[in-house]
Image 1 (tube, rainbow, N blue to C red):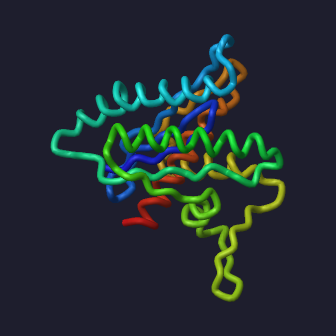
Image 2: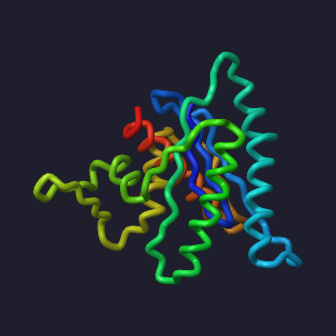
Length: 192
């Protein structure tokens, strides 16, 4: 089995797949701030909450598959092209903390994949080649996250129970989960 993660400081998306890319679990962990924690301590606390989640929830779920084990873990690299260098630094720092926690819990060195590479592998219908180099182009006026979510939903034949708010709008966490799904499918294509 293979785990895939989309890590952010507010929500971590998670996908568990078999070696053929069959979805076994799609989940998310919503991270909340304690109001009395300083900004540096918030990241440490969130990383610790994620580690506890891995031990208590993910490991428990994996035990439902006797004889199966995690063979690989794929993590989407933190987006470092943010217009705010402080945000980029914080995302990189938190991604590193969570990546280390994943390694510590599973004793597997995670493999990293960029957002662009994951989307390019997941959406070949949007790729053109210029001088042999793949270029990913989403149609104009299309929200990338929504496009990916719709494709994930279609690939899973509408069998995923997505979360909606009281106004029947998709919750943001759904996009984190679909991003983890994209990372999982792309990781299996790239690394296996």
